[in-house]
Image 1 (cartoon, rainbow, N blue to C red):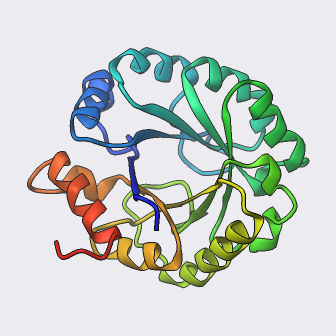
Image 2: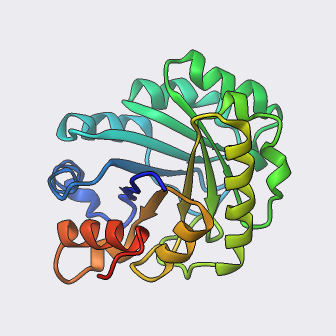
Length: 224
């Protein structure tokens, strides 16, 4: 297994002090920061626009990824890249022409990612791997923080791992939803190497830096 990457979602953050929240996450040793972009249509909630992300970018020493949970991602790609997101993730379920959308992200100078909801088949991404830098297996249904991890997704993660390995392409396999010091073990064992944590990390009693270390250790199967 490659060194696991711990990526916090800022969805549980104090929105009134997002710049400071971003700085604190960087100081805690995270690998990059995820922005859960919701449009109120593809998912019920409405969250971060590109101007807000751009305002927070100077506070960060790590990369940003935008997870676009929106119905018309193609219309927004350029704005999130311009806002400072080096990685842009779209949902396969929201893209009419997924191959074209992923290629467009790269044309804009960012890395491309594709997310799959828990029910979406692995084969959906089989023919776009050459245009993809990351595959995200959702371990909750998107739209809300604080949900319980769906362990039934683990066989799907394992199938994605085999597919990526067989492609021999440098594609990251990310999981998002309900990741804790306990659930990360199953996701890592199935083959994930990037782990999104939001509510659990923010609620960790010893602080964010300790939470990051605990997640990394647990992902590697070490005693924590």
